[in-house]
Image (cartoon, rainbow, N blue to C red; front, side, top):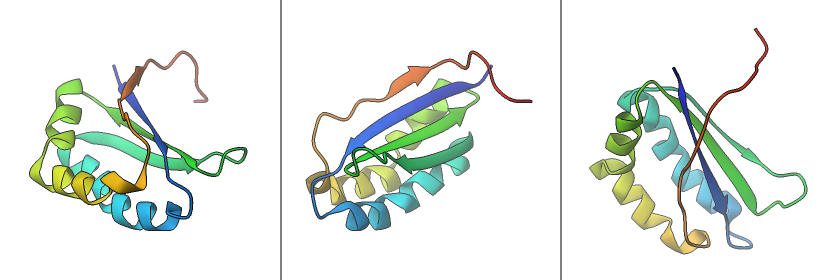
Length: 98
């Protein structure tokens, strides 16, 4: 079973590029902690809304990544670039293409 985490980042106006430049390395680190895949996409209707979707074999791997020293440091560096609170939402796949 694959676990899907979704983070909704509501980025502060005029800081989107700075946020993505700083956060992308943290998102890339997810695969080193066991993520099967990850992606960040931006809403066409609300350009300040970014969603990060990551697939994991184990939820504990997400926790290890999220609280790792590297990601904690990056999270601290972007704390002024998005609105709080930031909580992961866990999703289950229902149907998909083959």
